Length: 102
Image (cartoon, rainbow, N blue to C red; front, side, top):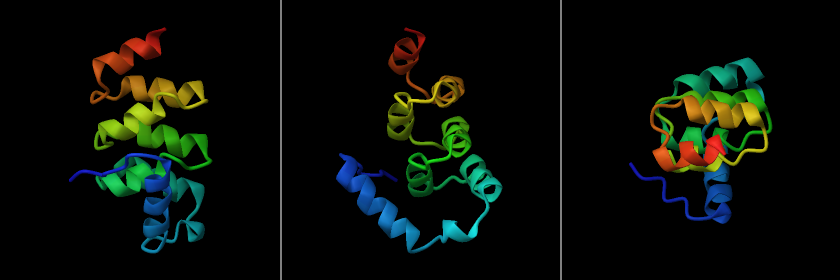
């Protein structure tokens, strides 16, 4: 299943469609973090990769089901621990690992 996210506009549209299906406002940060760590849904992972909470973005970054495109986006996250989590993911492409090392 391909995400089809080509730009930030597509990501915003995706966020809006997912918010219709999951009410994250009713979930605690720990519940959302658990979803980010365990889901295999590319859409949920893409959505949660833009969450304000660093721990949730880190959870997305270490999830083995996170799509490569999402890992690439997270590799430029302003938080160093999110970027470190991307580096720990076995699916992270080698060229991204090299960029993270510099």
